[in-house]
Image (cartoon, rainbow, N blue to C red; front, top):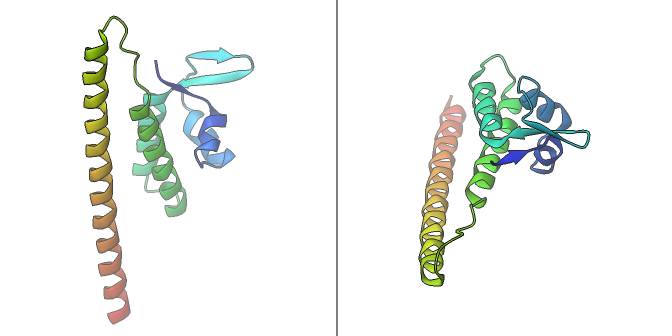
Length: 129
């Protein structure tokens, strides 16, 4: 199971307040010493809920969106070990993962370009007004 702690959320760029905001409503799946450990996908879902909450400040929503992207990126990086596979099967599996990562990177670059265009169009409209 893919897990995360508040400390890891802070290391991903969240403030202490944002890490608490995201995890406060969640039930930890276990304790590791004195640290609560949360399911990575539950944290991602909670981030999505907070982003959709229009009562939150835009800066908080943007920070949580960045945190969610970091969480999803982390989820993609964590892979189960291919135990029981031959060497050739492991290479094929690794190649598949590499292609998937390249596709995700290309999608992310395309999203960034679309956001840049949308922001520049919005700022151009504001300047004309």
